Image (cartoon, rainbow, N blue to C red; front, side):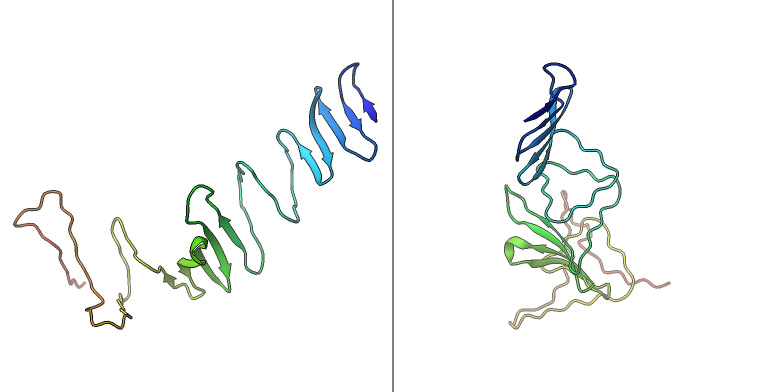
Length: 173
């Protein structure tokens, strides 16, 4: 064991034969080499960091500028350890998607490489919708029910006899 002490009784550097090297600040261990790499106690302040392999953050990571994720099919995976479902953001073949990984990677939101948006399932909007172009509603079910349906629904807290219940307005300019 090699022990460098800045003053008597205070640790500075401890180097063990075929073992760990420990660095101390004010007699408090801050850095230690391990069989798997390096253990740092406290905050690491770096001008640049390149990581190859897996990085694990056990609490929070704060990024104050851009985060760039590169690859042939980059993705970000969100795993909620308390509840389901879990999600991932995926970019593959020019398409951007949000997938439900708990339910067989089901697409919940997709923007394809042509810029078209697909939202499977129900789509609820709070507020106004404004748009340009055509609105096409397509029902692909094979049953005899009427469809697609276009519903105008008013959920009034105080309905009255003369209330408008919905309105389709055709306007020209």
